[in-house]
Length: 118
Image (cartoon, rainbow, N blue to C red; front, side, top):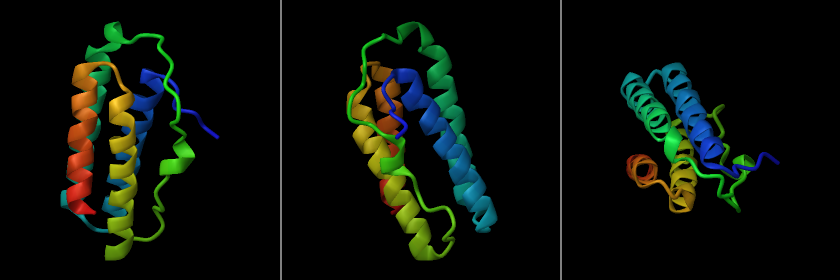
Protein backbone atom coordinates (compact mmCIF):
# COMPACT_ATOMS: atom_id res chain seq x y z
CA UNK A 1 0.00 0.00 0.00
CA UNK A 2 1.34 3.43 -0.94
CA UNK A 3 0.94 5.68 2.09
CA UNK A 4 0.39 9.34 1.41
CA UNK A 5 1.96 10.35 4.69
CA UNK A 6 3.43 13.79 4.00
CA UNK A 7 2.56 17.10 2.36
CA UNK A 8 4.87 16.30 -0.55
CA UNK A 9 3.42 12.83 -1.05
CA UNK A 10 -0.17 14.13 -1.10
CA UNK A 11 0.62 16.93 -3.57
CA UNK A 12 2.67 14.59 -5.78
CA UNK A 13 -0.21 12.11 -5.85
CA UNK A 14 -2.68 14.89 -6.69
CA UNK A 15 -0.48 16.13 -9.55
CA UNK A 16 -0.07 12.60 -10.90
CA UNK A 17 -3.83 12.03 -10.57
CA UNK A 18 -4.62 15.13 -12.62
CA UNK A 19 -2.02 14.09 -15.22
CA UNK A 20 -3.65 10.65 -15.50
CA UNK A 21 -7.10 12.26 -15.72
CA UNK A 22 -5.89 14.59 -18.48
CA UNK A 23 -4.61 11.60 -20.46
CA UNK A 24 -7.80 9.64 -19.71
CA UNK A 25 -10.05 12.41 -21.02
CA UNK A 26 -7.88 12.92 -24.09
CA UNK A 27 -8.26 9.19 -24.86
CA UNK A 28 -12.01 9.44 -24.21
CA UNK A 29 -12.26 12.33 -26.68
CA UNK A 30 -13.30 14.87 -24.04
CA UNK A 31 -10.96 17.80 -24.73
CA UNK A 32 -12.72 20.17 -22.32
CA UNK A 33 -12.27 17.89 -19.31
CA UNK A 34 -8.68 17.13 -20.38
CA UNK A 35 -7.99 20.87 -20.40
CA UNK A 36 -9.59 21.29 -16.96
CA UNK A 37 -7.47 18.46 -15.52
CA UNK A 38 -4.34 20.01 -16.98
CA UNK A 39 -5.23 23.38 -15.45
CA UNK A 40 -5.70 21.72 -12.03
CA UNK A 41 -2.35 19.94 -12.46
CA UNK A 42 -0.58 23.22 -13.22
CA UNK A 43 -2.25 24.93 -10.24
CA UNK A 44 -1.23 22.11 -7.90
CA UNK A 45 2.36 22.22 -9.18
CA UNK A 46 2.44 25.97 -8.48
CA UNK A 47 1.04 25.44 -4.98
CA UNK A 48 3.66 22.79 -4.25
CA UNK A 49 6.50 25.02 -5.50
CA UNK A 50 5.30 28.09 -3.61
CA UNK A 51 4.74 26.26 -0.35
CA UNK A 52 7.82 24.09 -0.23
CA UNK A 53 9.19 26.32 2.55
CA UNK A 54 5.95 25.83 4.49
CA UNK A 55 6.17 22.06 4.42
CA UNK A 56 6.46 20.61 7.87
CA UNK A 57 7.56 17.15 8.78
CA UNK A 58 4.24 16.55 10.48
CA UNK A 59 3.07 13.10 9.46
CA UNK A 60 -0.25 12.52 7.74
CA UNK A 61 -2.15 9.39 8.68
CA UNK A 62 -4.96 7.52 7.01
CA UNK A 63 -4.30 8.22 3.33
CA UNK A 64 -3.39 5.38 0.98
CA UNK A 65 -3.20 5.83 -2.78
CA UNK A 66 -4.93 2.52 -3.44
CA UNK A 67 -8.08 3.78 -1.73
CA UNK A 68 -8.51 6.45 -4.39
CA UNK A 69 -7.27 4.81 -7.60
CA UNK A 70 -9.79 5.45 -10.39
CA UNK A 71 -10.62 2.94 -13.12
CA UNK A 72 -9.16 4.66 -16.16
CA UNK A 73 -10.13 1.83 -18.52
CA UNK A 74 -13.84 2.66 -18.69
CA UNK A 75 -14.36 5.75 -20.85
CA UNK A 76 -18.16 5.50 -20.89
CA UNK A 77 -20.26 8.29 -19.37
CA UNK A 78 -20.79 6.16 -16.26
CA UNK A 79 -17.06 5.39 -16.11
CA UNK A 80 -16.26 9.10 -16.30
CA UNK A 81 -18.65 9.84 -13.45
CA UNK A 82 -16.99 7.10 -11.38
CA UNK A 83 -13.54 8.55 -12.14
CA UNK A 84 -14.73 11.99 -11.01
CA UNK A 85 -16.25 10.51 -7.85
CA UNK A 86 -12.94 8.77 -6.99
CA UNK A 87 -11.01 12.00 -7.53
CA UNK A 88 -13.51 13.99 -5.45
CA UNK A 89 -13.23 11.40 -2.66
CA UNK A 90 -9.42 11.74 -2.65
CA UNK A 91 -9.47 15.54 -2.48
CA UNK A 92 -12.25 15.61 0.12
CA UNK A 93 -10.32 13.19 2.33
CA UNK A 94 -6.88 14.75 1.78
CA UNK A 95 -7.69 18.46 2.14
CA UNK A 96 -8.41 18.49 5.90
CA UNK A 97 -5.15 16.65 6.57
CA UNK A 98 -2.99 19.38 5.00
CA UNK A 99 -1.84 22.09 7.39
CA UNK A 100 -0.82 24.64 4.72
CA UNK A 101 -3.80 26.92 4.07
CA UNK A 102 -3.16 27.64 0.36
CA UNK A 103 -2.58 23.96 -0.42
CA UNK A 104 -5.67 22.92 1.55
CA UNK A 105 -7.76 25.48 -0.35
CA UNK A 106 -6.42 24.23 -3.69
CA UNK A 107 -7.35 20.65 -2.77
CA UNK A 108 -10.82 21.77 -1.64
CA UNK A 109 -11.36 23.54 -5.00
CA UNK A 110 -10.33 20.37 -6.83
CA UNK A 111 -12.79 18.37 -4.72
CA UNK A 112 -15.63 20.72 -5.63
CA UNK A 113 -14.79 20.62 -9.33
CA UNK A 114 -14.64 16.83 -9.41
CA UNK A 115 -17.79 16.45 -7.30
CA UNK A 116 -19.70 18.67 -9.73
CA UNK A 117 -18.75 16.31 -12.57
CA UNK A 118 -19.46 13.09 -10.70
